[in-house]
Image (tube, rainbow, N blue to C red; front, side):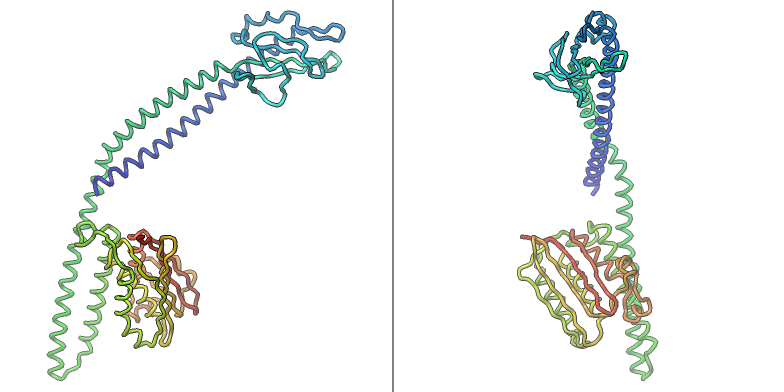
Length: 414
C-alpha cells in the first residue's frame, strides 16, 4: 500500500503542477504577445501621424513630400512600408519594404508571400472634411514572432525541467505524507481484528451460558421466556458485530485482515444458485413466488463470499418487506461487458425523501417496523460497499405501496 499510495500522490501532485504550469505558460504567452502587438500598434500610430504631415495635395492628387524624414525618430521605421491611396482605394504610391499593395481595412494583420505584416491606416481629409484618400503603413512582425518563439522555447525548457524536479521532489516528500496514513491504516486494521475477537468472545460465552441455562430450566419444567429474549438479543448483537466488521473491512481494504482476499474468476450463476437454495424454505413459508430469469455462463473477477453476501442481502430485504403471497422478480442480463442484476418486490415501497439516505449506516425507513422485523440498517450499506469493491454501481427505485427495485451493474469477464 505504501508504495502504491506514494506513486498515486506523486502522480496527482505532478498532474496538478502540470496544469498550473500550463495555465501560467498560456497566460504569460497571451500577455507577452499582446504587449508586443500593442508595441507594434503604437509604432504604427506614431508613424501614421508623422507621415500624414508629409502628405501634400496638388490638383486633387496626393503625394508624399519627404517620405524618409521620419526614419530617424522611430527604430522600426526603416522596416515600414508606406502606401498612399486615393479616395477610391487605388494605390497612388508606395515606399519601403515589400507589402500587400492593397488597402486593408478589415483586419490588423495580414500575410503576404510568407511574411506577416501588422497594418494600420488613416483616412486623409481636407480642411472641409472631404475624404481625399488613405495613408496605410505596414510593419513586418518578424521581430515579434522571433521574440515569441524564443519565449516559447525558453519557457518550455524551464517548465520541463521544473516538472522533472517537482516530480522527484513529489515522490520524495510523498513518503513523509503517506507515513502517517500507513500508520493509521495499520492501527485501524489491528483495531478491527482486535474488536472482532474481543466482541465475539463474550457474545459466544453468553450464548453458551444461555443454552445451558435453557436446558436446565426445561429439565426443571420452568419457563424460559427471559432466556429466549437474551438469546434473541445475543444473536442480534452477534449479527451486528459481523456486519460492522465486514463493512469496515470493505471500506479499509482486505489486505492483511482475512485470508483469501485476492479476487479471482468466479461463476455468478453458481453463487446465485447457492443463495436461492438458502432462501427456498423461507420463501415457501411466506408463500412468496420468486421468479428469476438468468443468463448462462456469467463470470466475474471478484470475491465469491462477498458477492454471495451481496445477493443474499438484497433478497433478504425483498423477502423481509414483501407480505405473504407476494412476488419477487430477479433478472440477470449481460450486455456490453456488464452484468445487470435487478431484484424487484411488490412490498410497501420507500418514500421519496428516504431514498438519498438508504445506503447510510443504521438508516431505517421505519424504525419501529424494521426493528420488529430484525433489521439493523446495515444490509444496503454492505451491499453498496461490496458493489464498490467490484467496481460496479447500484441504484434503487421505489414507490410507496408499489414496491422497490434494486439494480446492480458489475463488469463481467469475457
